[in-house]
Image 1: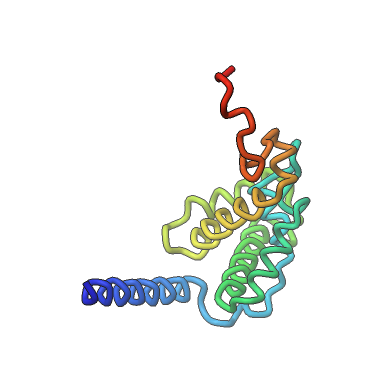
Image 2: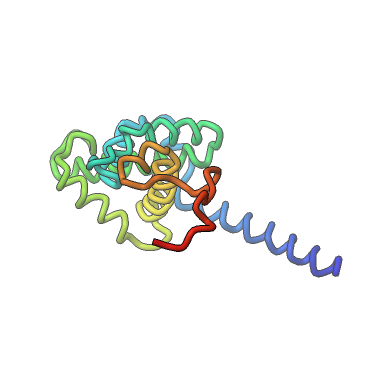
Length: 166
């Protein structure tokens, strides 16, 4: 039993190391270490646009991203490299940067990232930030209220559990 546990833990460490190397290969070195994150709020608002429950930046998701990334050099490098890519794609169509584009042009660039090759920078950036954006957005109870969701049943419980269903 101990040998199996050791092998499982060792395999986990090997897989984790490979994943870190592959992400580092995608985002590159520190060339983009000082690149500004000005595209991030517009990008996140393209993924989670304003509707009856507000956009990603309305809920401070962009600030949460920057706060979380400030604790992880690799995560910050990914955000900076992705922001640089977004701005370069915007410049290809004549804009000063991603945040200067209209919403439909932003959607085209975000779709390009979503459909890029699996281990390319745009795809890794899109997959990671999309997952993290939805997690941060729906962690805020205000997003539940505005979407008509009353929240989880606990800690309120089910006070009418003994009654017949309606």
